[in-house]
Length: 366
Ligand SMILES: NC(=O)c1ccc[n+]([C@@H]2O[C@H](COP(=O)([O-])OP(=O)(O)OC[C@H]3O[C@@H](n4cnc5c(N)ncnc54)[C@H](O)[C@@H]3O)[C@@H](O)[C@H]2O)c1
Ligand SMILES: O=C(O)C(=O)C[C@@H](O)[C@H](O)[C@H](O)COP(=O)(O)O
Ligand SMILES: [Zn+2]
Image (cartoon, rainbow, N blue to C red; front, top):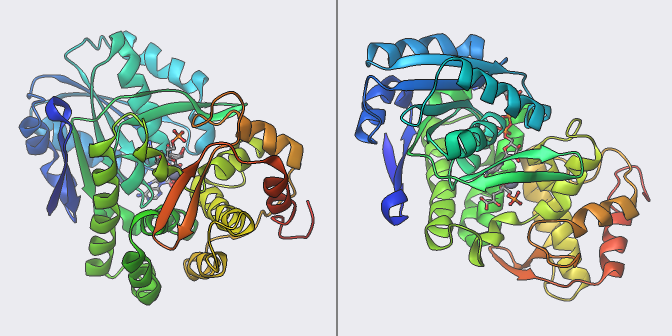
């Protein structure tokens, strides 16, 4: 079991990664300052509950915690104000107070939703991330918590750091193949924004990683999480640098919102968005010959590189103009200047973006 630390002064916290981490959960909570006897509110989803809820509750109960749980529907549509309200109602009904802690047992959806509930319940209580997806190497770290609005992804949210991330890689063995691919999109993103040698390593080890070779997977997660930790530790609230973690997301979030948060999952949307970002960078003369390699590495990990459904270009532009990185409706993108290097561009003209979007549907012109 390996440990990374997000260094944020009094809000610093450990990320424990490895097989079997969940077995040590009660001890790790205690070390993180959440003392036995306190009420713990475990939130999970309908797919994860039959796999990991019972033993997690048992481990925590044996560790001396008073454990309650709540099961939300599986999938992105659960990241909504309606489900958030249900969590609040349940928290009040079971009598959680400011000393209680929320625990997210799940992927990015459960993590973001539970974190937002914790950030706002009685103006903020402690929470713990117990990620169960590959993608959640990203979502469980950094304290961005939110729910979606039909007009925009993660629009209602907060920055609220967890007290602890306990990432048990054994849980990844039950992930469906599509969710494995989705998780690799954010792993690849961490290479594309920060470290060309990591991208090369991912290209060379694609077969072993997708076969879940234990050592390779552990190495990939540590490397990807280290990028996220380095960025968040320098810029917790996205005043500048942190925006690089958004490579592919101005595009990707628009694809997710316009497909009603179903059909294209987050990793897939980010993958297609990173292809669009590479093509836009080339069109603007910011980079040369990067989109081909970007497409190749994403395909190696069985990710889509084009939109599976046609979306209206004007509607995509409208959603992108509301992106949280922007001001005054300007189009803001994180764009690659080389493999492993990106920059933030705050006022991109509409025409080249239109041109890239028009060629992004896999069936031809949108
Ligand atoms: N806060 C952040 O910094 C951040 C970063 C990246 C992504 N996100 C958010 O994360 C979300 C996507 O997260 P995700 O990809 O983990 O999706 P998810 O939470 O919906 O999980 C994907 C699917 O896998 C199932 N599942 C989860 N763990 C499982 C397991 N161990 N075995 C079998 N099935 C399992 C879930 O029930 C779900 O159907 C998006 O909402 C995205 O916006 C947030
Ligand atoms: O942690 C960040 O910062 C990120 O941008 C990570 C992204 O992968 C993640 O999808 C995040 O939720 C996007 O944030 P948003 O501010 O664009 O909603
Ligand atoms: Zn993301």
